Image (cartoon, rainbow over all chains, first blue to last red; front, top):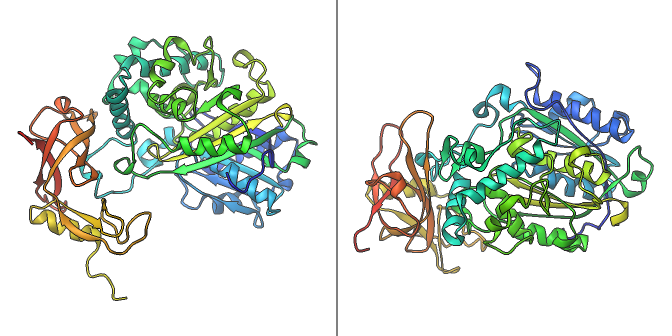
Length: 384
Length: 127
């Protein structure tokens, strides 16, 4: 992203709040606070150190205000940019800018959702759109289904190839004790699952869970004195191409082309330099589109690229090692969990699912209906 | 500047009430604009003029929604011949029979109660 420096900020703490199905009457801000407490502990810091608050949730209209009150931090620098699930990748860029400008010295980025407990409709009320709502698209799924229909039409992508994405995510999830899904999944089970919006079945769609978490960011200088090895922000980029699916310029090309290009340029890296990928897999078509748009295969080849377990634990490209939004956790806005997993992979904390020699990670958030694309490239000290 | 006397949406609905599918055109940008706006995207030009579409288009993308209660139904994106895209549905055939590339023509779905009229499409013959 123009104006930001490679390695100009670092992530020094990362943690989930309770996830899955949380205790009764937990609030989204409770989960943010829980995540912040755990992430600060991870960093070896305390709440006294925090002077920057970045947050988003669909369940609080003024979430930065609510969080500042809850934490008792009236003087904190705040930013509650909300553009759907990729909000947190954008917060990373904004936090880096704030740290570089001296607006804050320790920033937390937090998320909380009780979507499973209160119901999807209550957690994320849809605005009436006079140009779409009369046709009753089942959003967001129908928007992604429309994109999948177009990808299948233009490039011959198959139902089975979409299902491969869900199966790979499940195989990774079986290696992650924190994942929601605990049973194996086959391509046939994905195809024969309850249809939602053709060509997508319920197994092509992300989970509906509760959850939250936080990451802690600080300046590169301060990062070197923390409890855990720092993870540096090497590159950032964003592109918001539309808000509604009927205004997306081309349903087979996302703004990840632009956000990825910005992030690679800032990081001085190419796709082949990336060791671990965390791609926002709200639906199976996402992973295929993002692999193409971020340069891991040519446009139109994503379906064939993911065949034969290529992005699963025994494949040659490590994608969504936590099990993803499809099988690990998806409380409505998944972007923060991508960052948490990338940090853990770069620190070598991932146990059975650890990727060998992980020096660089590409995190890609997707918000809305393929609308707000944001890329963050991370690396350990060895990647600086 | 004098205040606008009608919103973009109100003008659009007024056309539908007359059986017309309307869109906007920016002469300075030489481009169709949909959904209706007060200024043109990208250029910011305030020269948007209303035009009435011939009502012919092509299915760009399509899905069948399977509600938990009730029958499956079609949702489609239609590329209208004058150069803009809109969400709609294709009626008069089974939802799964709607295919990308199919030629379609506009008709008005009439107002019902508080809901204003909206545009739907049907398969076109020889269009």
